[in-house]
Length: 327
Image (spheres, rainbow, N blue to C red):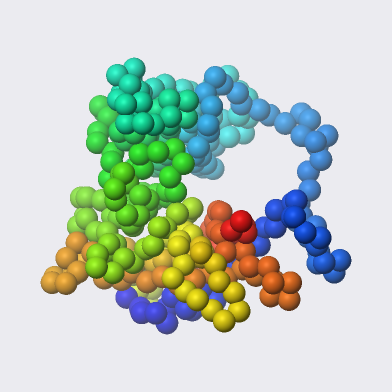
């Protein structure tokens, strides 16, 4: 495993797009080009293939180009669509609603029965060659289940999901299934601090929350695997990157923000410590992401989304990020 120098080298390769939202409450400098990279007029959407259902709050998507399948998770339902024509009648559906009893329990906890007391699908990913894995908030009692790919039906009874899925539909969250191992980052229950976890069967690991927290009110937006071990001349380990915005503890002489964008990294082969870091990551590192226009004093310190483009080598990997203003 490499140290901080490896992270610094990788971060130099990151390419970030600063997305500037329209409608600033101030006038833009005339010499600042804010033309969108791609503009689509409403007339250009005519004739587009569309998918519609009674479900709402589409929250997660998984595109598998080889099989031309697009999997979509929504509130109370999941869909398997033909990626070449999402309007085709061949779409398969799984209905997975929270029970009336569970909705009542959610309401008694003080949650909103119009937004929170439903089963919002937050995780829908490939588990192995025959099955997908799906997790939902289930009215503030998370559950997970395996899905048989060909029939697109649940192949098992739902299992406990509180360590893999957040309780609420709006909680910052990201997850990856790597070699049938689930890596997640979120705030998992009412009283916990946000952390990055690797769930069993491999040694379960998480970030430290006391006495010094490694994450400070982190709001996760994405994660990515960068494989390095296969064919590596140095025998380096695969890396998993987590992207988030957290509460700032930094002060500078020029400006200060209460939130800052960050990226963290752990090694896939991390087994945890033997003494002081038992069941904790020993390879955890994080650093700040900066997206700014200093000449105009614009600092986009809120990370909204990320997308990874894998290259031929780990060093060719590019991450694209969308940033916003804190206020």
